[in-house]
Amino acid sequence: MLRSLLPIIMVCAICSAFAQTNTEFDVLVFTKTNGYRHESIEAGVASIRDLGKKHNFSVDHTEDSTRFSDSGLAKYEAIVFLSTTGDVLGDAEEAAFEKFIRAGKGYVGIHAAADTEYDWPFYREVVGRQFVQHPQHQTGTVYTIKQDFPGMEGFGDSLSLYEEWYEYTVPYNTDLKYLMRLDTNTVETNGYKGKCVMGVFHPLAWFHEPAGGRAFYTGIGHMDDTFILPAFQQHLSAGIRWAATGKKE
Image (cartoon, rainbow, N blue to C red):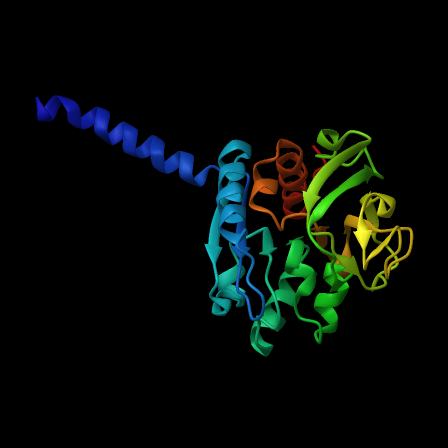
């Protein structure tokens, strides 16, 4: 009986191995923190793993910055900085990341990725803007700016969300292409409705092509529940795919 089952077992094992390696691209999710640690990191990792299964890309997760070396990053098409905070990479690790981007590969920043590596000029260039402050968590209205970018269809023209709304620095790049903005008239910012450090235009997500690579950033992602929102999942999976492959499909 066992002998008769061996061919079936072997075929199943081969199919399983093939399914694991036959993904369109590979992504490394990096969640090291050297400052505030978001409770939603675990929900974010789980969500990205699920998106990988649904959309045919592999996902590895690490908080070990020593993975940032030429050999350690070689298999990946994109790196996701998921609510990282503070200084998370050493000099040699920074050099490996810069080489990775300059080789035409991708970066994805989620939420507190903008609260990371303030003293590193190349990272500032890649992330595009950085965190300044935020008001209390509250419901705000998000308006879509660029509806032809993949993954934005779930937001429609606008969508109300309960989130932590970051305010950002001026852009470090002039080529940022904005995907959505917060209507500051729908939130209390610094105690004054409609007023914030950034002014009336309050972008929340953008993409661009720094140093020959691709970078996608979304400021949404503080709340656990955000990661199970279908509109956000579409937004995130499309951003990851574009950063990894350059495809807008």
